[in-house]
Length: 222
Ligand SMILES: C[S@@+](CC[C@H](N)C(=O)[O-])C[C@H]1O[C@@H](n2cnc3c(N)ncnc32)[C@H](O)[C@@H]1O
Figure 1 (cartoon, rainbow, N blue to C red):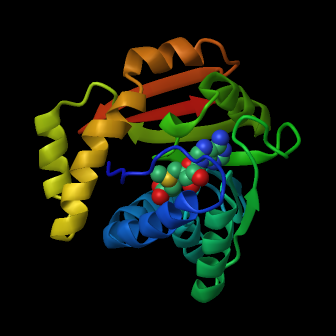
Figure 2 (figure 1 turned 90 degrees about the horizontal axis):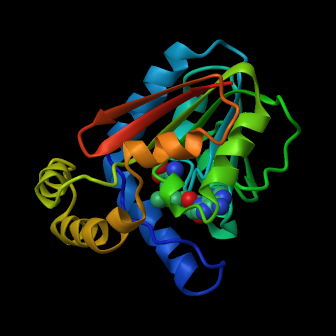
């Protein structure tokens, strides 16, 4: 699991817009990871599935998924800058994915709307994580599945160094990414036990949490 640095958003002006643009170009260096994840998910979900990406940022996963099958894909991100970047990238790629502005803790969708949802490298940024989990449960159809992929809050500094070294980033981005992991991201990331505690406050019928390298994969079935 790779997760590139991104501070919490505070609005759309100035700094946040610059950070969004930097994030979009930095993550472009790890496109293989989005492609592999999209390939895997496209095999796991049925054609025609309604898919929600929560906090898609530049939209790379949604765009890669859209290339691989006929899915109805919506991305919901709090940042207007990211919504614009993602919509432009989808248009350039010639795929259909609908990027909308809104919050993970107050999703503008009716109950039972989606077959599958993904939230990658973003959950630790959410101001109301338990409410976001409850919203994920609400908008999934009965039997629908949610997948959260994020940094593990108890990953060690040496595990982080090894992970970032394998990402194939330019020297500048490697240094910046290690710094961001250690000074910001780890502080907001959750451990498996913290996820278990938060998920106990939702109505998911089944939850599985796997630790992988410096990340966690949380699979939630409604
Ligand atoms: C590190 S980026 C991850 C982007 C993308 N998931 C990826 O894997 O490249 C984190 C994203 O979370 C979004 N975000 C933060 N808080 C949010 C919230 N409450 N609701 C929706 N999106 C949010 C940010 O705007 C940003 O696009």
